[in-house]
Length: 171
Image (cartoon, rainbow, N blue to C red; front, side):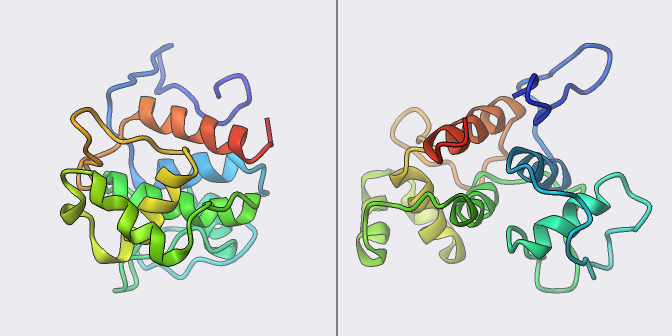
C-alpha cells in the first residue's frame, strides 16, 4: 500500500503499525485507495478547516457518500477511529467499487451471531460490519470477536484496504 501511495509512514522512516489512526487519516487513505480526486464535493463540518491537510479528502469522502459526521455538524477529524466506524466507511466504499455481500440484508444481521461480542456493535454499524465480514474485507479478531469499539491500528487499516482493493478487482 505504501508503493501505491495509499498509506504513508508517520515520518522519520517509521510506519508505527500498532498506532491507532484518526478519522481524517482513515478518510484520506480510503480516498487515495479508490483513486478519487480530492476536493470533489463539499464539507460543512464545523471542525474541518479549509486549511487542514485533510480538507480535500474529507470533501471527496463526503461527496462520494463515504463519510458522515457525528450528527451535530462535526466530523471529529482528530478523533481516533473505532473498528465499527471504519467498517461503516468501508461498506460505503464497497458500494463505489461494486463489491457486494453474498448474504441478503436479513441474513447479514444474523451472520454476526457467531461472534462473541456481536452485541457490542452499535445498531448503526451492524449491517456495515457484517458486509465487511461477509465479503472478507475484514476478519474478526482472535477469540472470535469483532472488537467494534476498539481503535483500529495502522497495520489493520493497511491490510483491510488491500483486501478491499483485491476483492474489488482493483489490484
